[in-house]
Amino acid sequence: MALITKKIKGTEDVLPKESYRWQFIENIMREEARCYGFKEIRTPVFEHTELFARGVGQTTDVVQKEMYTFDTKGGESVTLRPEGTAGAARAVLEHALDNEGLPIKASYFVSCYRYEKPQAGRLREFHQFGIEEYGTQSPVADAELICVAQSIFDRLGIGQLRLELNSIGCPECRAKYNEALREYFGQFKDRLCQTCLSRLERNPMRLLDCKSPEDKEIAKDAPKITDYLCEECEQHFTEVKSYLDAAGVEYTVNPTIVRGLDYYTKTVFEFVTDCIGAQGTVCGGGRYDGLIEELGGKHMPSLGFAMGLERLLMVMDSQGIVIPDNNQTSLYIATMGDAAKVKAFELLRSVRECGLAAETDVVGRGLRAQMKYADKIGAKYSLVLGDNELEQNCASVKNMETGEQTSLALDKSFAEKFSVLCLTDNNSFLN
Image (cartoon, rainbow, N blue to C red; front, side):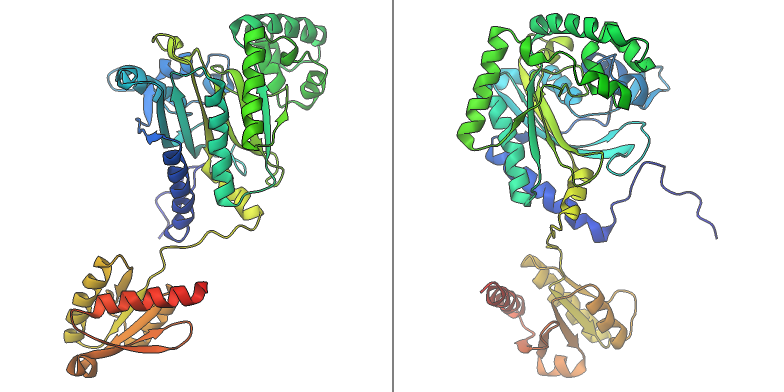
């Protein structure tokens, strides 16, 4: 019988045998966010379309080409979130979180949706970890933000990453820079792609981010934003770099980084790798001091970053980083007879209450098939329970790797003694 349907193009399933990998990196991200004072925020998967049009920017590819937008039965235009920042900023405003004191420090895990051509490292549904900080214009916050990302990469053992840093200035110095870009790119109108021609007047900085080979070649000799920074923006950028130097974080200044969304100001950065092909940016972010005002709030300087989980896993795979599976079954109890099944159920409950994973047969397998299944799921220990074991009130727990057996009483002390056995074996392995 043929399947009714399959997964939609550009989406992927995370299967039970793979989910521990996601949980591992998510737990490290949560721990690092906590260490830096960030608390989790959760926002809806869809928002009013105008939130992204205003927040992300009308001239971006995301808004113009990639959003999943539809009308509700009530006639409202809503959009599946293409990124996490706009929704978080909306929540900050709607719930007046600034009344609880500044800065507001939030972290999140979100699924995002963009209608793009699916390829390695770029899906139509993808997942991000992000952090946001609202209510500070201090360059210390910029450097600290970058340090959070660096700490996560260090904890995961990821190498071969480059931190590329830039400042795209404030609206004042950027206006002068935009005029210089219009003058420069205006010389090449007959060679620019149609997308860049449409951006030339509205948002010329976006030309620096064009993927067209010919346009990228033209952009190489374009004016650099670092030559147009006002005194305040230049001082801010200098201080950000000084704090990174103090923290021992290596970076390269790349004047061509503009990021893909319109809300960025001043500091922008990317962590880039060459080990996964064209989609080499695994983390990107920066400062967006005008976003809250754009969404209808008072001036509240803000900053943040997002890193893609799919790309992060690709990098770890390419670098041979093994993610430990902490979901290993500690004990599998194989049973023979109804009385043994009841006793196994009792023992399993006590073992699980000790925080250990334990299983038994629930599909009616014979003894040999049960033991094959215990081996298949990678159970660390097994125990065969039948009439003899019940009569003696004792059974042998077998180490599935070494074959060593330990006799344990089937009484109230079983779970505690089994936990000690597991701990002892783990310590022996570590030593």
